[in-house]
Image (cartoon, rainbow, N blue to C red; front, side, top):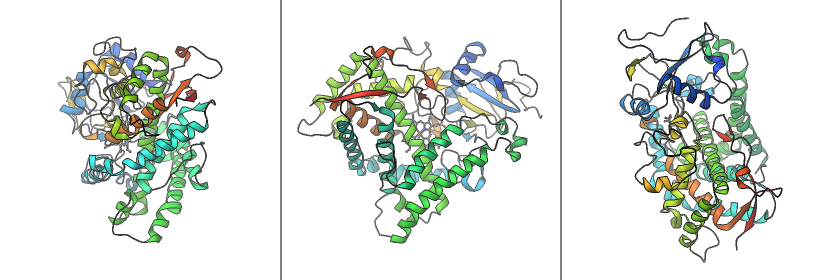
Length: 478
Ligand code: HEM
């Protein structure tokens, strides 16, 4: 294979011994966030590995993250697209925000459209009733399950998914029972799960791009078929119906906006599917971890309840978002959960669009770059007793925020590729968690009394999920 070129003055970042041909493929294991954190303790904050013929550079400190996401933001803002992703195909790539290979004009237009229509303060205000309505349906559903086991992930995922889908296409797409709203939509949630499962399979085509054409494991074919069936469902059940209804002057949801600006079915499908998948598992996984941490730390749970209850309008049977937007302890619990359990432990993979030099090391064009925020979030250099769930730390450092300026705390990334859905995610998570803890007391099933028994192991995948789903029993408080 062709060796990556490096400047004569600067070497490549150091790293473990690279075996001929395979490099370090077999050293990653099933929990790469842990393996790569261990490597950083041996090889330093910027190290490199060889995965087959591909160079992977990993940053694991605040200084390294600052250089990658701020100093060299432009040069390293490309996206590394896994071989099995349908976004590898050029026709679909240019319709995507997250997987578009470079931050070009199309990417800028799509991001600003989403910002204006979905994530700006005005757009969020316009959709306030949708979020409150879905949180209310969740509370009513849980009230009906009083005293019975509730799989937190299922209820919360359906709530977040529908909060989003109602803003995008004015329809619920998943039912709370884990089943369908309508036949086609049931398939959609199961298809998305299958895609997430396949995405964790190591793919030889990523390690040896010359083999990509053969798709030896058939992964690209399988993922493409699954995507096509999602596209079919969206097109047949939603887009065609809306086109048939004809255009109204005012746009009532995001789909209307896309149809009005002349987007094709493929453009609409790529964008809707991307927003639904980027916006659901990230927030619902954060909520599941946050509930698990609060149950394990009853003092924090009490403190949060004591903050939320007086803020509520006591006449109301459901939470109004305006009552909970300025609650410092709720915000601190959200931040502390993201620090310990970031849904994207490595953010999303970046790619060098040109040669550049980081911390006196050469980064060749097309290297894949990971920022290991999981490691930074648990590094004792930046965090006292880093493994403890201690939201108070964020009350002491109130200015520490996740908007991409504090490089020891970047769960949403930073720079031009920073998560555009940050504002929406904050609203979803706060409203759902506040509703869960204000209206219900939660206990563990099977007479398990000790909350520290909750298994906190992680499962590495598209998002870093709790391995064992959190199952709790709700009791209404009033
Ligand atoms: C707790 C919730 C969330 C977390 C922790 C999160 C985190 C992230 C991270 C780490 C990235 C990659 C940044 C990078 O490449 O450097 C990202 C990208 C992205 N996120 Fe989020 N996200 C969340 C919720 C959402 C929501 C609700 C949406 C939309 C509905 C969304 C849409 C996107 C999109 C479209 C991108 C790609 C941006 C680009 O490449 O330009 N995310 N997110």
